[in-house]
Length: 107
Image (cartoon, rainbow, N blue to C red; front, side, top):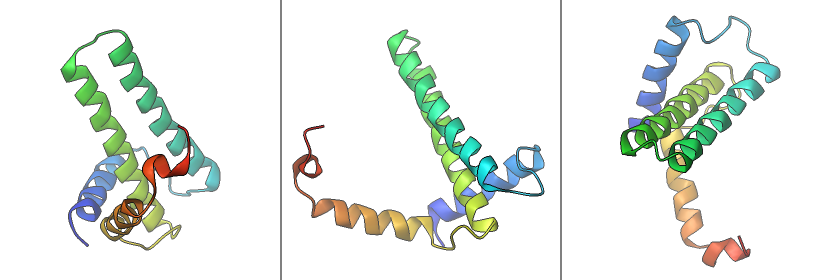
């Protein structure tokens, strides 16, 4: 376990303490959490579209990272995965380096 895993655990503890995680986690709850990450991405787009400034863009990007890491720790806690996020990221980055430009698609 290294940086991302530790940060995920830290954020998940805070999120749980603040009541954002129920005692019983199911697929519907996980789906809602994923959609909350999407909604944060929309907020970044709106900050850019409405010229809300660099601070707002950075803040919304931080929300994406917070929600993503919190969700990952929650997935680990609820046995959806037991893989280190740091290890998974390193593996994915290494794989992506071997892929063709734009991964072989137009966009």
